[in-house]
Length: 198
Image (cartoon, rainbow, N blue to C red; front, side, top):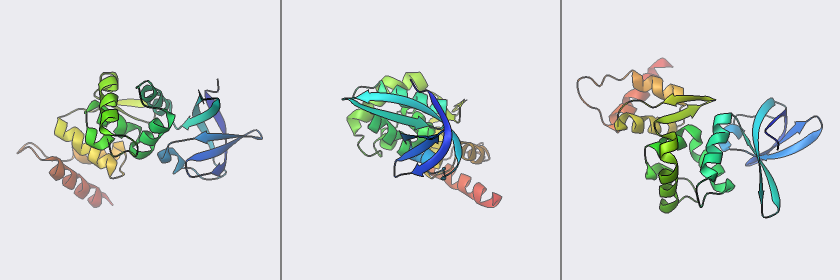
């Protein structure tokens, strides 16, 4: 079993990369979020999972152990294969996927190509207790504290392309003591805060 590879990025394809490890090129299917940060010649460490399906051996790569763990958790759900799990990670990212499952947000999950309502419901049913209240960034787990509205606002920030750290920091600056803000109001305030920091 290949658990980790360290080498140089040899080639970047649409949804895969070729990693040169001491002269051997490994073809890895990786989430888009990871792929988009890479450049040819860059030395990286990739956490890997080998999957054998119908006599086809495939190698999947991830930027962190937490991302790999999320991939494996999704594979445990009936009807979710490697391509679907990778599609979820590519579309939402690991943090938002965990947040959507824990928050039972079918709207976010069904935005993923190939994931219908029934599949999204199975993901929620089978995984929510395992990851409820937690999301990840890098290798660390972070508790998503606060109300459902705050969690939804954070999901929206992640969907807009901000990192978990940026989203949490911006939302933390919002004053909700006087009245309860809607998701839309919280996101607007957070965006205003981020704009002022630039």
